[in-house]
Length: 302
Image 1 (cartoon, rainbow, N blue to C red):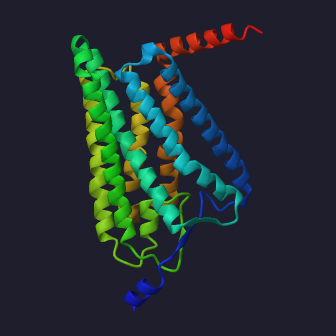
Image 2: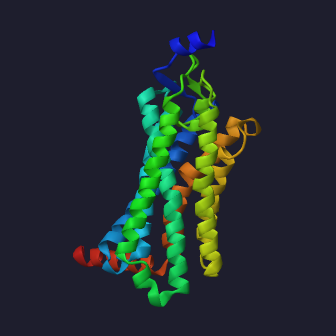
Image 3: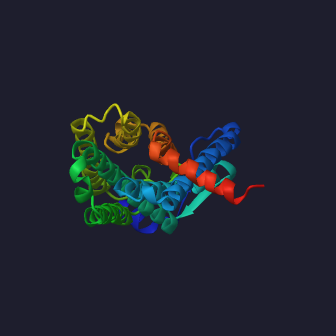
């Protein structure tokens, strides 16, 4: 019976199928995504260093940007190294505990990112619409609880999704059609009912995408900042759009191959874009970069 199968066939490890089965694409894709990861890490660490070294960037806007960069760095590091292994190993095996750990941290950083993007949009709104009360409105007494709150939200969501996954029993077929441990591909491998899991995903992800998206567009709209923040809007749309496409459509309407492509946007593309969008179009960052480089050139004249 199904009950006997469920009791006897719980797996201790999963095999991640990866992005593609085409052997001739494995090495080119390995170097492509390795390049993406290096660019992401260098961009993020440069932004963190610049923000830390330059005292004129020690304000709420850059406090949030610093944390966004930290989240993006962790987010990429949770996903990409394991993904790279799938291109160069015949079997990309991940233990059950390793899989749940990756799922937990991915969810934690993804949810934290969605809410920190909202905080940055609100900060932009206050900067443009209420500049006279900006210092009081976005004081450390306000920013620190906001930051703590969004990390608590991330932790709560990660615990909810991981606990729901932990209650499932997985069948003998442990081949998962994805390049990372994610909720929906693993639900396909469950012997037990996944109704509660799907309901949690729909409700929680709906809130985690709906609330930040509304906050961001209202903030940018009220501050008439769409023209000045158009690049931010593109990054936000990619992040939330690809997330909604992956999690908020019935699985029957979305083949897993499309799901994998969609999840590439919010796991690989957005962490690369964020440092570029939030820094290269920013005068303060450019000034800080020139100052830092000129200090270095003075220190090492030869």
